Length: 135
Image (cartoon, rainbow, N blue to C red; front, side):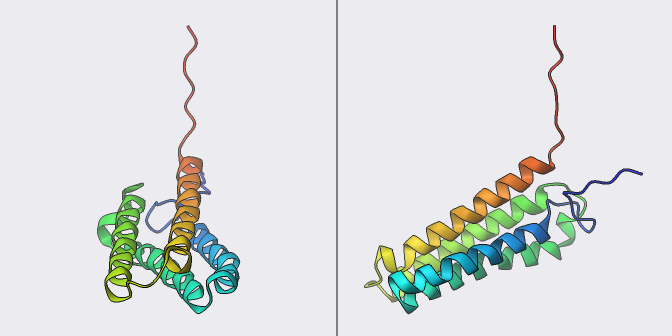
């Protein structure tokens, strides 16, 4: 019996549970910093960005096209996450032009990059190791 520990049994994508746990950890670490540095707006930025990053994971989890397709689900979630985060940034820029970089966009970038690092780590860890044949 072969066990693949780094993949979910549902849809064969990289460990979604681990990514959700990392998202929660990033939120718990950055939300207080956002509040103390930028006030309520910094806390809201962290919360909104975490929601933008979690929503694609949950949506892709239930899409039948992503089941059994390896890293297609992850790629789809990354695309949705990027589009959703960009849309939120555009909405904030249009509705509240007085919001500065330290108040909102810094926290969006920090959360997004932290989760991208975790995402990449999980993908690389789930790939099989290949060795080059020596001549």
